[in-house]
Length: 183
Image (tube, rainbow, N blue to C red; front, side, top):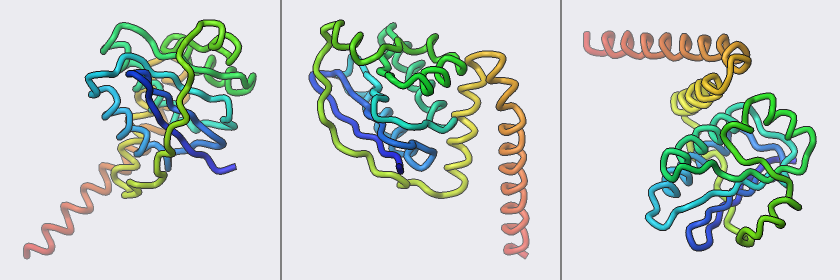
């Protein structure tokens, strides 16, 4: 199932609800929403709901890690992440997410007497498909994952190096094209 992200808030508590197979195509909208969210003067918490999620790609995981670190700097608390899937929980644990989120299942969330989760609106997918910005987002997300633990650093170092090399080559090619045009 193609993925989507819905977002909403209620009295400063924001909810990001992921559905299906969420991939890099949704990350531009996710990043834009998160930027607005943490700048909202009423913001005080965020809950990430993965109950309807089948899969998260590594770029999406990196965006979530970056969000958590920003939220912790802002209010000295890690966000809550609701996950009932054993498979997703294994992925999150292997990536070190237990250090940057309070991971709970739905029953535990309900037992905490936290606010009801608002319905929210669906964030648009694919609003920023320019190759340069997508590559930059993928690099930034994977660098964030690399900072979380040594296993992630080893897993993603070759990918990040290859993408950075590709980025340098593209920039060099663009400079050469500009120089030719000036002649």
